[in-house]
Image 1 (spheres, rainbow, N blue to C red):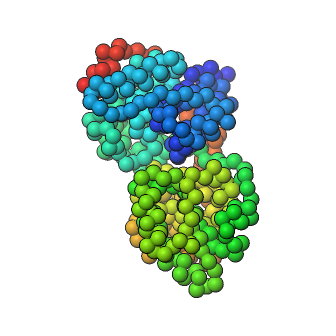
Image 2 (cartoon, rainbow, N blue to C red):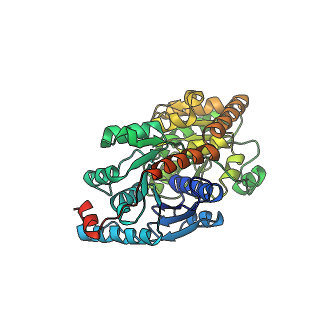
Image 3 (cartoon, rainbow, N blue to C red):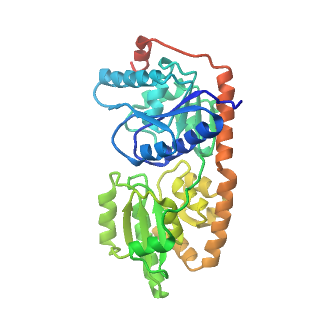
Length: 397
């Protein structure tokens, strides 16, 4: 019998928007259900529509939601916590696997009310939080039996910035896999009005302040001019939903006269087809845990030009460090882009090495086994834990 056979595992996510954390949760949930025999449900803390629910349900994963507006005073927040605790209790979980700050904090404060035997804090970034006070974030983290991160630098961040016991933090890199493309390279380029000879790069990343589209656009302006001198046109495709910074990014593209050289695609369902249609992936960011904006293109066999920050360094590995530029340095990033644009053989060589690295390091089998072994080991010594609503209220007092 598999270690998780018959176990009720509830993944808790912030909402239905499909980002890296949600994609990680869906992939692992599907694996637990199909291979390990677990009874899996995803609970979203917001019911606003997004693609994540449809993706999960297409994979046979049950999805439910409970609205958790983290607004108002202490009593309003307590009501939100108890609402989540009751929703979780109805699901009768053995294990809770929250991810992103809202889910982590909510579950960290209430998991003992739900009847679960284990709650695993999943740290998906190193940005901290504005929604919660540092005191509350720390309390919820320390109330969680164990934490999992996708990167070693994120583990160190939990230990040094939040005082979490390093023996309770485990690094498990998230699975990376992509479905077959829906449309071909030719179809994608034709739909976007891009010639077969054009040099095309893409960045996958929602348009929020954590990504550094500013430096990328300034670098792209330099690269476009030099690639044109060599007889080619260059097009940058930005795939990602509007997330608060879209007006500034589009305004800068206009100011840099990049209208013919940048296309905004918003949220792309056929990521595999998009990646097959481009020549290079770029990933310019201010902070990452282990950015899927690098690892998914690597899986697809693309070279990656990116920002030299811990989360991207860990993603590309030692073999990709030479293609990373100092954060905020548009000229350095342009040089990396041009080096790869001018050398198709180098791009192909790097792309093959990238795909091999991701398949070896972040396969579904590897990720699932590490998670399964960790949870099974902890469940052996973890009795069911229940506390009263009065005690739960004390968690945020």
